[in-house]
Length: 117
DNA sequence: ACCTTGACGGTTC
DNA sequence: GGAACCGCCAAGG
Image (cartoon, rainbow, N blue to C red; front, side, top):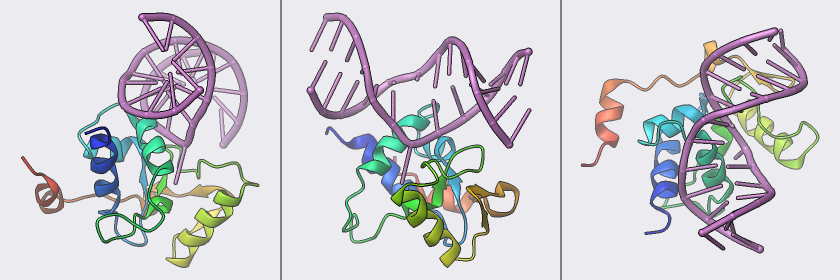
């Protein structure tokens, strides 16, 4: 199908726990698409607003490898993303989140659970 | 088939 | 930190 990659990406994003964040490249890697961070950005831009497979896709938990929100600070989406993160106790200073404190570190059982060969 | 566009990333200065 | 540069590659025109 056309959107295999998007589906895989959305699914991985749904695994990010509340109160934590992941970066685009990290999601790409976990989705079996190493080196394709930009594709993750595209996929997130096409997330169905109503959710996917019965669940919402927490697009706002994905930020860039610099630990920053990737929207222009004045944009509508920037404000939305920051608000969502703060609502779940993630500290956002300006556009920055301390990855050291909030980056998702998936454990082995989570990874195994998500694999479907 | 060619060109441009991304919610990017690593390297380097 | 931050900016410039280059690599990446699916989608859409």
